[in-house]
Every structure is written in C-alpha cells, then in structure tokens.
Amino acid sequence: MGRWLSFRIFLAVSLFCGLLFTYPTVAEPLQFALLAKRIDQRFFIQAGEGCAEAARAQGDVCRLLGTSGPPHFRKQNQLLEQAFHQKLDGIALSVTQSEWLAEHALKQRGHIPLITFNTDFNPAEQQLRRSHVGFDNLVFGKQLGRLAQRLRPQGGRLCVLTGSLRDTHQQERLHGIRLQLGAIPNHKGTERLRGENGWFEPSRCPLERAETADRALLQLATLLNTNQFDVIVHIGSWPIDQPAMYRQQLGPILTELDRQGTRPAIIIATPDPDAEQSALLDDGLVQAYLGWSSHELGRQSYWILKRLAQGQAVPEKVLIDTFNIYLPQASSNSPAKP
Image 1 (cartoon, helix red, strand yellow):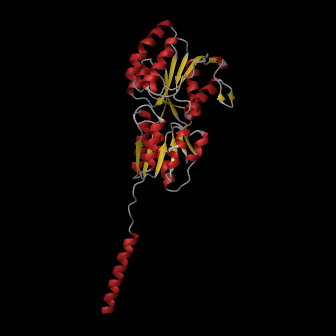
Image 2: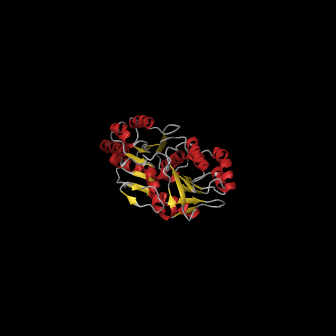
Image 3: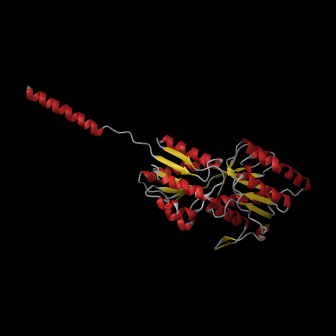
C-alpha cells in the first residue's frame, strides 16, 4: 500500500511538472516604430494610424516617432540614434537625407531590422534596409500627367512644384509626369519638356522646397501672379494642408485670373482629401486631386516589419499602385488606373 501511495505521489508530481513545461506562455507583443519626417502632417499621422491598427489586431505595438515642423535630417538622425537604443523589433524609416544618415546614425543600427517607407534611400545606400514600402511613384507621376492632359488636351506651359528633389520619390513623380507628356528618357531620367506634344517647362521650373504650407502657398501665389502658366502640378499636399489659408491667399488671385480668362489648371497630389479640402475642389479653387491611402502604407509597413521579426523572407519592395482621382462636383472618388 505504501508503494502504491508513493507511485501515485510520483505520478502527480510528474504530471504537475509536465504542465509547467507544456503550459502555453503568452508572447510579449512585438514593438515596432514608424520614424517619420514629421509627426504633425496628416500624411504621416494617417500612416501611423494604419500601422498601429494593424499591429493592435495582432497583439503588437506600432508607434509613430518624429519631430514637428519642417523635416530636418539632423533631427531625424538624432531620433534614429535614440530608436536604435530602444527595445524595438523593427523600424520603418521615411528618409530625409540618405547619405548623411548612412554616415552617422545608421552606423549604430546593430541588429534591429530596418525598412524604409514612403521615401527610400538613394541607390547607393539601399543595401542598408531590408525592404521598401511605398507608392509606385512612376505610375503616380504618369497619372498626374494624364490629369494635365485631361484638363489641357492641347498642351501648354507647365510648372511642377516639388519638395526636395534629393528624395527619390519626388524624382520619380517628376519623371513620370514628363514621360506621360512626351519627354524623351535619358541617363538622367528626363530633361524638361521643350515642346513635346505641345508641352513646355520654363527654365524656372520645377520649383523645389515647397515642404510647408506657408512656403508652398507663397510659391504658388508667385506663379499665379506671373500669369505665365497653363497647368501647375504640385506633387505634394503642402498647399492644401491648411485649406482656409489656401482659400484666403489664393482665392482673390484666382478670381482675377478668371476675369482675365487666363487661369491655369491646378492639380495637387494629396492623401485622400478631407471635407475642407474637397470644398476647395468643388468651389473651383483646385481643378483635380490625385489621392492615395496613407493608412494602407502604414498597414503594409507593419506586415513587412512583422515578417522580418519572425525571421521570414520579405520582398525587396512593396509598391502600392492604386490611386484615387478627385474632380469638382464628383460624388465619389474613382480609382486611377496605372
């Protein structure tokens, strides 16, 4: 009887120990970060929301990091250095100045998986990231060109306003516009339009560094006051980031140009517009928007970071090529075809 009791005790202890070793443990949530150029711009806020929502659905965390105000590579470099010393399972970076970051913060990266989103490294530094998540900016630029052709079928004088042409996505959008309108490709991408299919780019264009609402509106007002353009394309959303300011500053100029019959068509690239921005369109202060989903950019960034954290293979690039065209009085947006 004593042996049987001892056996039963041994069996119970063995089962208990087995349960200790086999009982499933709750995994710690993975920690990811989107390091944006700035965190006070709707585009990056929406991308951060998309990443956070996708992560939350999987029990993970995705935080938006960055500074407020105009982007600056030194500020981003400092934040990137700090992020590398946090317990992160992956970082998605929207690149400010590729070469500078490679020579400074990225030397401290360690083993944290790094991808880029929205803005990639220049080709010389692309080996520093595992993947890039962004928009197909060549397709996007071509669609902007199609909108220009739709609004001015006969061609005309074109000026493109950009952020920094150091950014690869800005270069690709400009290249796409020019290709669509008939420019001849060369080893530099394309030269400015010089009459192909009736399209001309004056020597002062494209205009760069329109990366704040104030500066973008100043540049746009200056172009309108010259009364020398048939189509103006802004390949970022900065002019309409503050819709009331756009209406106040440009409304009187556009009214006068209407009176003279010399008003240019204005096309602006933007995250899908909100109610105030749509009102600018319906009131004729903008002729067309080409929109994209920043939320989807954030969601796709999370999934690539998640796969890397799990040791899975990822594609070298994930490009989103579905965009939405917005025209005045349109009751709904329509997808733009590549």
